[in-house]
Image (cartoon, helix red, strand yellow):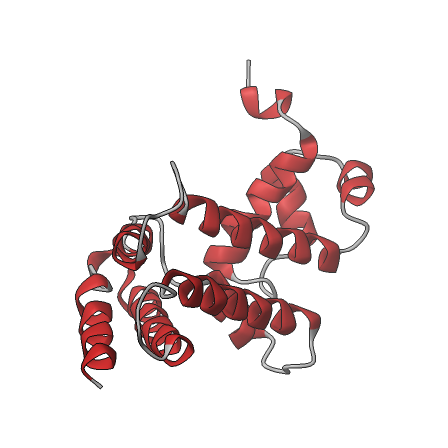
Length: 184
């Protein structure tokens, strides 16, 4: 028996949307395609997500939560170096083809659009996360975190351009940034 049909319909919808939005884009993915991929009826779909916008917001929330869970598992990293090594592993996972938030921002470039704002919120949350990991260091934490975040965003852009065929370095360039801030 098909286990997908036995699972929670909301989860199936979100999983299908995640796959399709991430690989095809939000604008290119209609609700009918998501309903078909998740094997749910139209009424079931709209009971869980009254609009496509609601589904996109849930997708972005899911991606945000999943990213931080991956970096903080099985326990939060003990320092910035461990976090960067974990982030490098996440970014180089075979299924990663870029940043879902940067992809959304490029599809919805108006910074006033709610999807773009959610992408900016994720970027700010990530910046704060990195800044927090830099607390023990006697450096300009916010500036160093922003520089490291630029390395990570660049790595995700490389994955978008080259796909999983290109492994990207994050730890070594980020540590070079840290050394430059510590020497300043």
